[in-house]
Length: 495
Image (cartoon, rainbow, N blue to C red; front, side, top):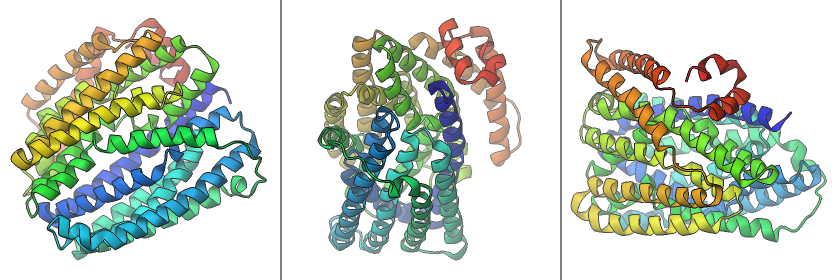
């Protein structure tokens, strides 16, 4: 299959799978929030943030090594087998050591966070973290080969099992510790399925090649990802839980930040992993100009598929929080509105797409420097602002860090490729979706979630009409999009 065909198939399957996976994951989080209440949900969120930190600490860039390295191995089966076998052995050993350390440190962490209820939750979360780390490596193996359907089936299955576990938690009033233990069992089942699917490569004779350059590249990416942890919501949740224990601040912030992230990525999550592999192949086959053109088009698609949802989330924040989380989460509505506006700016500046392009250029030190500076700012800002302003301090510090990272990395790409941020494109999309959202807010509609769904349909239809009039895509953009999605030519040519 050609590169275009493999990218098209990867994007299609990854988007379908990610949509189902993230819908189930978000539904599980919302159900858990209802089951625990804002205070206990904050405890659960702190434990999950610790698992995320441990996952970043033990990743060592192996996932990205597979996504970038496999397309460059020209499908030499023996070398691919060697790479997977070596990285999998290392991942299992590191994940086991980190999970055991987190388990043993749980009482000390609970004392530091002045939350005795946190210790048993962390102990159960450590087991979940082990299986989660191993499954991520195996998933990236298939994504790096653009064999996305194999990973998609497992991801979706595991997330729906997590949703069932959250529903059981709500129905039978299970504590957070039990929910994490069930999630660990679900992830273990996913690991077993992925191992069985990859058994051909795992048992194949390995063709050795020097691993030192690969591991150095992975370590640079790992350092970037660890630093990137401090630009995101997980570090904020840990610090809010530390400075405001026993309150609803961490739970409200977690609910708002997660919903904003879902709105920002719901329709573009299929590009995760696939875009990195595609950028890597284009960098190897073509020139920097082609890579810059692909980056600019990717950012335009990010804006087109995220901005209407973010504008909708900002306008209907109160209703979304009330219907999804229930009583006790009223504080999350204003936090959601602020985060939606931050994500709009971040998407226009490229966001995570910029980092993927820099990785494809074999420049892992640049993302490390950019995210290191922004992560340091976020951490310092959190330490200054969270004790005084709580969740709002985290929004301010993290928002500036996100925007700064996108601006700096995008300017580097501009200097190397000549491509620039699609500001005019973004203004046209904004001009189409803002009036649509205002109209939906003023029209009569049914109460509850059905009313929100009706409002969403109104926004979608009116926004499409606005885009038809404004025609934000250029001729070159349309030609590339038609190659990737020929069945949607009728729609692409009208935009």
